[in-house]
Image 1 (tube, one colour):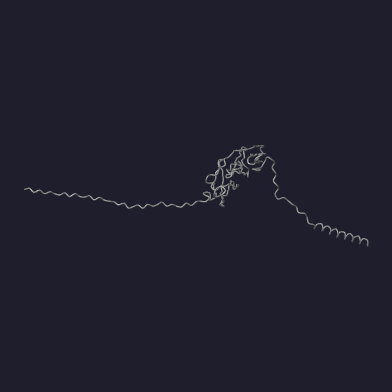
Image 2 (cartoon, helix red, strand yellow):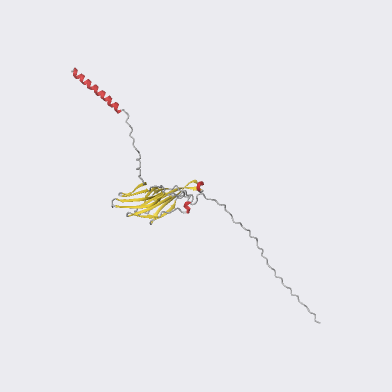
Length: 252
């Protein structure tokens, strides 16, 4: 009995020591797990400079790329259309003056044919924004004429355009400046344009209130000089009546 009691006591002591060791291991601080929130973008190999994938529908994708060796101011772009469901593939290319800023996908005329809009920044010092527009019908690309800014819309324009899609329309904003050349200063206002489409033709609506003039010049109102009309004297000529004298002759 004595030996059995010693064995049980020894086993109980071992269990207590093991529990202390295990709890001590669990209390040790665990190393923090480092996770990258945003995975790094894949690096494009030369001669490619830009790439964006647009998925219009499952199995229908558009890869937009730009490339060029040598000078970075000129190059070319291409649109790779992949219709994996119908096993159809097409390529659309064009010359590029400058660099691609962003690419948008719209269906502004709601005809079911996707539109690919490529925003580029040209080498022009003033009007440095250009948009390439294409509509794809059954895999075939039709080039569309993106409207240029009118003389009224150009007032105060110095570039720095911002494009985005809202409610199926293409929105365009740019800050307004006053003055010209290096003396141009921002006014703090923006001009906002909205682009739509009908029958494969763009239409533009100005949404901002300041589209007429950047800094209206108030010209003094010159009142026309009022020339007081002098009263006209009406002269009436009085007719003089001739008196006829009667001559009396004495007959004798």
